[in-house]
Image 1 (cartoon, protein in one colour):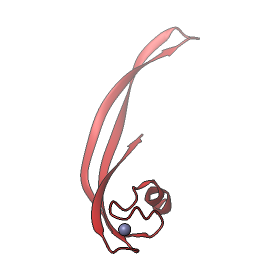
Image 2 (cartoon, helix red, strand yellow; image 1 turned 90 degrees about the vertical axis):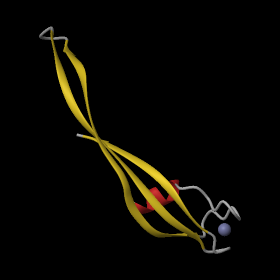
Image 3 (cartoon, rainbow, N blue to C red; image 1 turned 45 degrees about the vertical axis):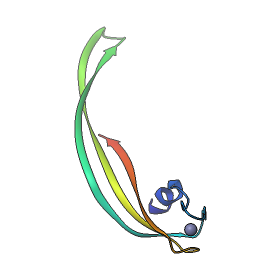
Length: 83
Ligand SMILES: [Zn+2]
């Protein structure tokens, strides 16, 4: 999974090097738990009911360094999961 996330991050803002950056650290910057509900309708029984789901939204701060020019910068990335 870390490789997939890394692939989605932006290129170096200084030299534009795409494959030469390095993840120095990854820290949880923010976390929100959101309750949401949706109405589920069953066609066979003609019943509808409310189903509640919890969505966790996590924001990570990445410290990145370009291996080509040495530029260091941070980026925020949000990931969402529901259960
Ligand atoms: Zn660079």
